[in-house]
Image 1 (tube, rainbow over the protein chains, first blue to last red):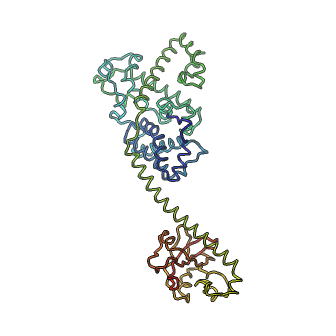
Image 2 (image 1 turned 180 degrees about the vertical axis):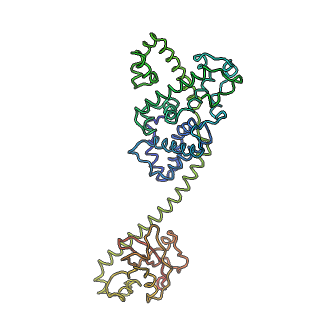
Image 3 (image 1 turned 90 degrees about the vertical axis):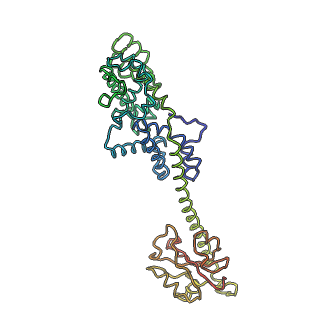
Length: 216
Length: 231
């Protein structure tokens, strides 16, 4: 998560300037806050187009209905994450697909795909969990396993582990108690480990190309 | 520390400020003595490694520049509309302030005005009409129930006027109970800045205008009046 240096203008001050018509204030606010929103949407959906749409909708909402933000109820960042979560849910409802990972490889696989496909992993044999975990291939498996987590666990894992937020920051973003974040992270990680143990205890497809949805 | 406690804090051994971080030494000591927990620790560390790798690889991901451009375009569009509304609001407030001052001044100087009628202190059409209709110094006739146009049409002055134009955020000016019409004289540029049809109404720099005021003093509608003596 990007932390705002103390010397920088606060989000709320930028928002006030933006409401007074300052285009540069809006640009600053957008550039400061949109990457985390975009990555959150990208990790949640595994789909760049959806992440772009969600990011755009989040900031459109800020332009069109800024009065919905109440500084007494939480930070602007949390407000933006809240809008992003609502838009993601709407999109999934529209697509009637609760698990937003496609049957095909999703787009983040480009980033996590292994150069180690040819390094001996996935050759129809059960491989050592620990050894395989060290490969970049397993990074892709973990990313896919995250995508198949139930939404509540997935959000927490993405924010706390991939965006490196503290429990408090994640709780603010998700509008839930810190204890809920902690327990969901604990459970989410346990589910991930279970899934990966299952994966590694099964014979892999001979192509080594990808692990299908039924596996993860 | 037992295995259950170890599992409870395993996911936060590297997270400062948590119970797990505080108890990590005890957790590592327990793992040294328990094969099952050591295996769990190894797997958990491998999972952390995968998280860090994903985080590093996706850490620079951003929305494409087109998204920012689209948002800025929307921001400008919204801002332009809001700016127009703000101009109208400011103009309305300005007119209301002028009217209020006019009313106060009129009320304050009324006795001397009746005592010393001079050529330089010509009464306006509205005040003449008010005197003829009611015999008092009330500045304007009632416009309740849509009668303000009738009142305007029956005015005896040889003047023409535009139709009443509702001001932004005005209530139903035609049906305002207790509304009054007040005559003011405003500069042509000021009226033009409100978008009023000043080109249809003579050539003078100062143009009389009738303003419908609601009972609470808020301006509701305006019309421009052409007067030969003003031109």
